[in-house]
Length: 454
Image 1: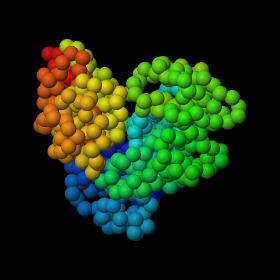
Image 2: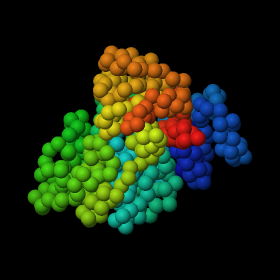
Image 3: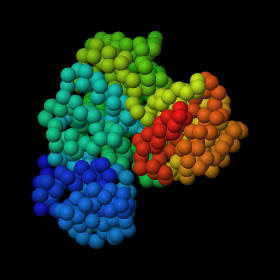
Image 4: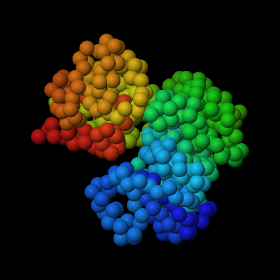
């Protein structure tokens, strides 16, 4: 626990996590100031009015942050740590932490923290369902779209906080110590922020940095990069694999999902064909969730039944509608090329693909190669449209069109599609060039699909 009373604190970013941090710190007697590069007087007028009424120092819309001796800077995930005022604050002795660390310092509960490049949201949601069905006091929060801090402040000591955590959240942790952590996979992403895969992997690996012999670390034994990082864990390591049988861990054999407890026998949880969420990547997500639940001592029948009845999450391979025999699938959560490739594999062929968005300096070569043979027409938008067009043309995709916005893409996709085809939104990019987040983008997609019925 840290006493923030009287501490001079700068909250950098007033999105969901930053607003939650302000509320908690203000009520704890801290002296918070707030920064954001947006003009919140116009974008979030209610918040601006509240901060003004509390006489909170505000630095918005380009107003420079003064070079002061802050005790703490609470950085929201979307705020880069290399901004000049952040560097200046660190040089003057400020501790730079994020909402995840603040939640751990101020709140209570047992954390089951889940990270990885892809699959975090689905695994987090599925794990939450298993824990709830087991009768555990359970909260699902984090990068899934629900700030951790308000939940942690209300948690009891035995509340399970099933928490999706990103590399941006983990790089601002210091003491964060989950009881169970899981590392799903590691592929290139956020290179505009982390610059190298080594730095990206190191940020992710902070999820188990403070774990010890009484904790559990779940990891993907099929991912070479993750397996190498797992060697640095001091927790009880539990691997999962869809490719190999394991002496200890969760794996597949003969189309069945098996949990093995190192010499203490094997438990058949369910069949692979009983999963209702499609794709090999979702099988991996189910294996990871099962391993987390096993580490928490949840009964096998609860694990199996929960996975059988899980229907997936919004914005991840979500069937938005079927109109005139054409399926519309919302995969707005596919914010990098690897995630979009998994969506293409899950859907199959006859795809009208809508892709493009904010440029995270990703390479689209493998994505374009995976689209060849599956995608009949590619509709591209956003900052990366020309970059993806070039990669797709090089891969031999002939029918490529650049559109102005998502509404045009949906209308054109429906015109081009034939009964049995799928219009798939799987952008392979973040949404920040056109939307606040992937959720807003996914909701807009579904809205435009519904307008086709009129």
